[in-house]
Image (cartoon, rainbow, N blue to C red; front, side):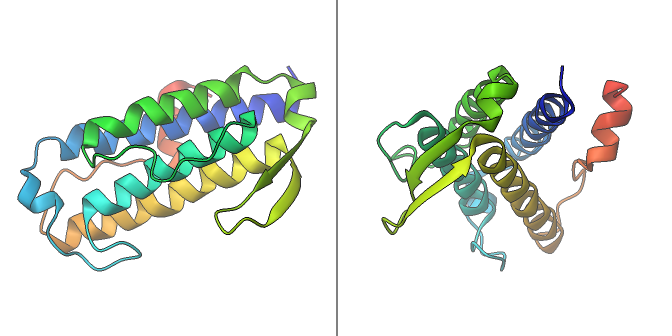
Length: 162
């Protein structure tokens, strides 16, 4: 396996693990808490997690040339996040070196056209999710929650023995 493939494999597996940790933890909380205002890029925990869902879905659709759909689903249930994460990370992990280096043509949400290698699009989406998971941590603390998942990349690497 090439170094690029190894990197994408590991970072996609990490993304899935980290997202699942937050979903599992936050499913223990009542809807009212998930929808309580906690200032960040998005005003609630649910809103932040749904943004991760919608973005991973959008990047999957761009990578595969499918028709754009935003939001990914009409509902805002936490259980809707992981199927989209699984589809995106599964696709990213399925690409070989040639697929990762292939140029994809897509449009952003404003309709602007772009050409970009698949690996760059994947890394952006994975990094984007990490950024927003960091905001989820801050929101959880602001709401007084405990048992905040430790989802640093190094924690995953140590766990996975990578």
